[in-house]
Length: 162
Image: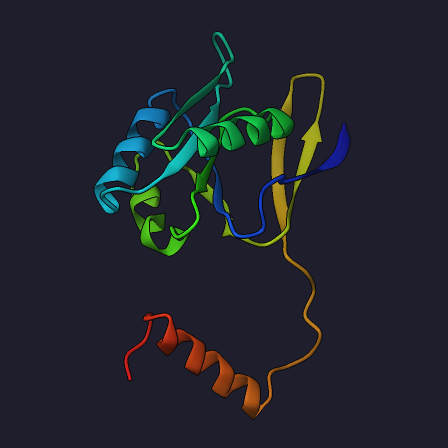
């Protein structure tokens, strides 16, 4: 078995969700969950089929995000994984629970805009995701001014009241 890392290739301001599923129906069900959760959402989705034709199945509402999802799914190339890219201005927090509620979804590895590497194991049978490296290691513990900044940020962007 060989271990490798696959860097997610994306613009800095684009969020994505990486997960594992178990059935070809995933593509249509995640698509429906996305558009139901946030009407007008712009996204791209790619799913790596693990048996049968073993194709990368794609869907979405934004051609650039579909192409981005497809390229990254090809790079990861691990069976039954899916990746969703959200166009600028859309965030995982708004769709994550809807995706988790899709019956085929087994796990979410990450939901982030950070620089991310996917840890992939490869055997004679194929490839599988072991986990992710999401962002960078901490530099320290927040101080009072850092707490104030965090709380102010959440209120300015509308995620907390007053």
